[in-house]
Length: 348
Image: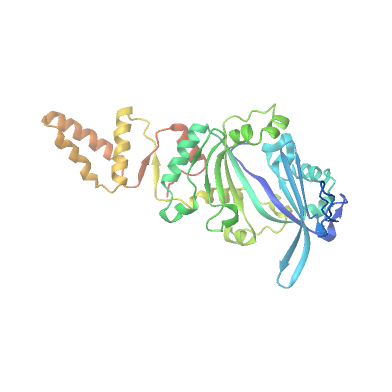
């Protein structure tokens, strides 16, 4: 599904008393035995974390102690993700697909919990995503344009745009240090990610699907404090599944805007000749570096012929009318469309 906001992954927390352990080794005590020497480590360990990796789908289930004030509750943490939907990966996690996620996790035979209690699980680390059609080349240019418009105070939170054979993208903050005002979000090329990083999954479940030229915007809603900042209150999984998608769309598009200069405007000059586009591009650069508009006309002093000078003055006047101190030029139509789809045309 393209051009719609989707739930890609999240953590669930379920009180232990609602959960039955199916795998006898889960949360069981064990000791280490060194194979070569036969020595036994007397320290007793607790197997509190299970990781299942099957055909590129990673599922984590762990024991967690939640502390709130003086109260402590033992909970089971489950990492849910859209890959657990296998062939329906691009549908994302929603009311229609959540049972497939539930059955996938139950079929691992690590734990057992009723579907009703599964829906009532506490939620955190919610990753929402938005997929659009864009080539890697257009995304690279878009990422460079976005990076040029990062607020000076935000540069330290934004990584340089990366452009590799295996992927291209731009990352804002890191998960561990993200805050409501500086959220973790990321732009990257989903097609390249599936071809290089998640090829086992793609080759197993997406062989008959067309996922060419798909770019993705991701945004993480970290915790309840972050939810409050965004004006939402999602206590459990069922609340998330029933949220108005317009609310999630507003949230996901707000992420990158937290880091950029919102006063900047992108313009498309499709009626200009290639030469005029180039001239206007450098006018933009000149003005953005602090030049006064009138100083643009100083180039006319290089023309000795009055007729040539008059002709060039007319051309410059026409071009300068299309630009002011806040304008930027993006020449690639596909790049411009990509920025607009993600609400990143920077219009104030």
